[in-house]
Amino acid sequence: MIPNMEPFTRSVDLLSGAIAADAVVEDRRVADLHGYYLDDSGAEPDRIIYRLYAVPVPEANSELQCSTTVIEPGRIGREYHMTKGHFHAHRDRSEVYLGLAGDGLLILATEDGRHRVEPIRKGSLSYVPGGWAHRSVNIGDEPLAFFAVYVGDAGHDYATVAEHGFPVRVIQGDDGVPLVMEHPGHRR
Ligand code: S6P
Ligand code: ZN
Image (cartoon, rainbow, N blue to C red; front, side, top):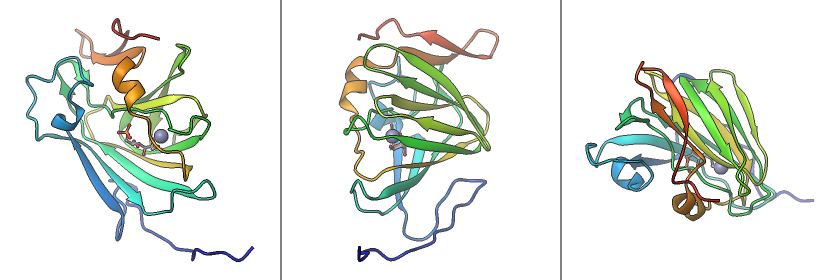
């Protein structure tokens, strides 16, 4: 084949997760996540929950999307800061997460009601197979940063998670320790 893309190199700050130069930067704030948390009434709408840095790559199944996510420490009510979470729009597309900094949990769930909880920390490599929705939670006191690489045309289905939620939520227990609890509102 005759390639139609040129090779390139970008710089990832392994401590902060920031990707330099032409990365597309997107912030997700409390207001953007309304409805995902049990109760966000006490949280300032402008507070940044997480930041995404995406290297611009064509959305084709021959390519690999590369991005980092940085989730600030904190809670909304008793729930730790977390991403929206999504299935890939093309359900069978897989993804790899490499933990860079901080202390987090990766919550995974299938449409038939199974779920898994995996750690995210410096050096953790998590494989997200097709068909598993995924959400990241910062349970530490420092920013949680991880690198993700996934099939170029995976896309994001946020609507299914927005409607049904995940089977578990991560909250701060009475003793101050993170607790993974069943989510009573979750429907299959
Ligand atoms: C993309 C990959 C991550 C997330 C990011 C934010 O497939 O899983 O880059 O997009 O961690 O999460 P979310 O659920 O708001 O897209
Ligand atoms: Zn994904």
